[in-house]
Structure formats: C-alpha cells, structure tokens
Image (tube, rainbow over the protein chains, first blue to last red):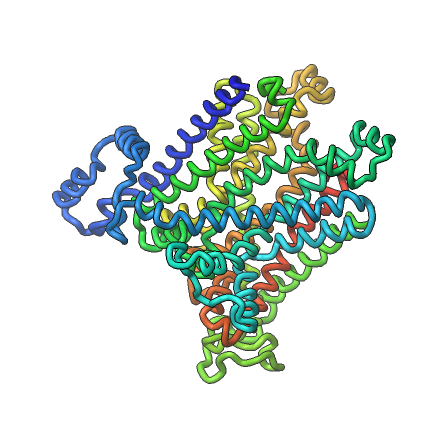
Length: 318
Length: 271
C-alpha cells in the first residue's frame, strides 16, 4: 500500500513539474519579448535593454523558470498589475466562491447520477434504461451559458426566486450566500451527469451480473436489497475515480457560470487576467488551478486504493 | 439494439440540420449579417425576420446561419490539428523505451491537468483573439485525449496475433502502426472524433461568449448569446435561437459518437 502511494506521489510530482514548465513556457516565453510588448516597436534599444534587465528578461530561460518555480513553491506568485495586490492574496480571497460552487455541484451531480444510474441498471434493456441514458446525454450537451441565461430569465426574472445579480459574501449572510450558489451549482452539475450516470450504470450492471449477486438471489434477497447491501460496495470504485477527476475539472471550469451570475470566484479572476494581460495573475491562477487538479487526482487515486482491495493488496501491480 | 440505433439516427438528424443551415448560409442570406437597423430593434419573429432582430436591428436568422460557418470551421480544424498531434505523440510514447515512454506520458498527464476552457483561455491570452487562434487554443487541449487513445490502443494491440504476424514478415514499426494498427483503431477513433467536434463547438462558443474568440461584428453563436445577455431579462427571445442551434450542434455530434460506439460494441460499450 505504502509502495503504491509512494509511486503515485512520485508520478504526481513528475506531472507537476511538467505543469509548471508548460505554464511558464506558454505564458512567459511564447508571447515574445515582453519589453517590446510593454514599450512598443519604436522604443529605443537602451530603454528596451533597461526594462529587460529590470524585469530579468536578459537571463536564460532555465534560470528564469527555476527562479519563478522556487518563489511559487514559497507561495510567492508576484504582484498583479491590475489589482496592485499580491496574486496569492487575490486567489485566496476568491477561493470560497469557486470551492463551494465545485463542492455543491459535484454533490448534486453525484446524487442525481447515482439515482438515475441505479434506476437504469435495475431496468436494464427496458424503455426506462434507454430513456434515462438518452436524456442525460442531451442535458449534459446543452451549453452551460445558454442554460444559465434561460434560468436567469425564468427563475430570477419570471419567478423571482433568486436575485439577478445577487452575490452575498458568506461573511455577510450565509443563507444568502448559499441561495446565490443554488442555480450556478445545478447548472454546473448538469454538465457532469451524463458521464457520471453512465459510470454508475455500467459499474452497477457489472456488479449485478457478478457471481456473488447470484448467490444473494439464491439466498432469497430482493434485487434492490442485494444491490444496496452487496452490489454498491464493489460498484462504487469506478465512480469514486470519476467523481474525483470531474471535481478537479469542474474547479477549473467555473468561469462561465461565474460570469453569467456575477460571482467573484477564481474563474472571474482568470477572465480579468486574460482580458487585461496581467501576466503574473494569469500565471498564478493557471498554476493554482492545475496544481489543484493534480492534487485532487492524487487524492482520488489514494481514496480508490483504500476502497479497492485489489489495489490495496497488490501494491498497484495490475 | 433498437435504442442504440435511435441515438445514432437522432444524432445524424441533428447534424443534418446544422449542415443544412451551413449550406444555406452560402446560398441564401435574407439580410447582410452586419446590416444594422436602429428603427427595427428587438423585433419579434415575422415574415420579414424569421427569428426577429437583435439589439442593433440585425436579422437573427441570417446571423445564426453565418455562425454555423465559424462553429464548424473552428471545431473541425482544431480537432484535426489536435488529433493528428495527439495520435503521433501517443504512438511515439507507446513505441519508445520505458524511460522516454514514462516521461512522455507524464507530459500528457500534465496537459490533461489543464481543464479545457482554462487552456483555451490561457492560449488566447497569449496568442490574441480571433478565429485562427481560437482553433489553435482548442486544438491544444485535444492533444492529450488523442495521445492517450493511440497510446492505449497500441499497447493493447501489440500482443495481438496479426501484429506478431506482420512483424514476422518484416514490417517496419511505422508500417505496422499505419497499415495494421490504425485500421483496427479506426472505430474508436471515429467515436472520439465525433464527440471531440461536439466539445470543440462548445469550447469555441464559450470562448466567444467570454469575448475571447470571434470578435464583433462577426457572427458566432457564443458571441450572439453574449450580446443577448445584456438584454436577456427584457428581451429573452434574442437568447433562445443561437443557443438552440448550438445545443443541436453539440448534441448531434455527441449522439453520433455515442451511437457509432453502441452500434459497433453493442452493450459492451457501456461496460
């Protein structure tokens, strides 16, 4: 077990190394000379050189990368040129919105998908099965910003259930904060249910046809009872992996709903940094999100290993 | 088996609707796309304006027609670039010695760690806005998906009899991959391509919605929805049509992929 965790840890470290390399290369190197970008094409050679050496751009790529990497490890991501604040403070202040958005939507998506997957697997081959699978595919394909606009019109405009631009900080009023999260969380969850329902469905179907389930049936247990007591335990492993991976993906994909519902989260920060060419902020946000994704995937692997005796006992040698 | 065919046929039907709109856009446009008419703003659907007009008095139907061009052009080109790069990367990783293989696959994992919209936004910040840059940005996040596909397919097939047979005849590695393994993986590839085109259409419109893709006064479904956003509470109808066409396009390609997958693998495709 320890060997497996160590192996996953080392491989996550390798992934992290490439993540930082890609982030730094794409954002700092690919756009070309930042001194020319800042001063314009007709700047004099002296002023360009002066800016380059003050920004440290005259040093080789590897030196700049390592310097950036080591200050990032110490949580020093530089200062945002738009906000004039330290990037790490900006990220931390926006974190609650995105965190709860991700958390709520993954819980909603898991509950809906587990229920639908269960109903579909018990009715395998019947009309309900096909109908559920087609419907979830349709719902998940709908563009989130379109659904957001329609929900805005219907729930906020017509029914007035939710405020239109109603974000309230959790420190002001927790109830209002949760209320402003309801619609965006559901919309984010909709995008995930096709994949998750399919995963619940297929692993339930597989465990329904396992030998021990037949043993349960012989013993006289009802199908639902056998499924809940015995089937779910072996069927839960594949969905755990998917839930973990999708939670990580969702975390980086909240920008659309945050924009439509005016929620001040990490996604909005990302959009501002892209629009305003705030390099330090962009680098910081991209790095933060990708590190979170790698971390989530690592934790998911560990959780799966704990749940799955096959991995737990074999040390991950399949 | 019947319901699998339903998904397939329904997907084909939806894609045909989009293709018809796409071809009509070259043959007949009721109004020039950028023609504004301040007197005729927010008109409801009528004979003159099939889907009404937007906040500049532009004909929504004409703009939706033209938008299918950029949606298809960006998605098909980005999936093409992304899949070719990804497939080659995955194949190289699968055929390399273990050390290089694990380095390349960690690199692919790292690419995977960038959620789709994040890498597209990051690249459009660096490359600038516009159609071509949007295609490159979307192609970027298609790479790891296809890299993993070709990697796993080659690893699976390496031990199969026909590969051993071909190798015993003296086929080179490249010949083996291109002429023997590629035909074997073509079904899974087609499924993935179709789904990816759906995702790419969605990402292109998301980028345009955020103001990072196609720029005004050009027409894109995402851009139209972004413009409709400002008036959505007073004139919700402006937001309905572009979104509906977008949903049809995305759903069409996803269902086609799903349908082909079910047709070829039957019930197994879900397990």
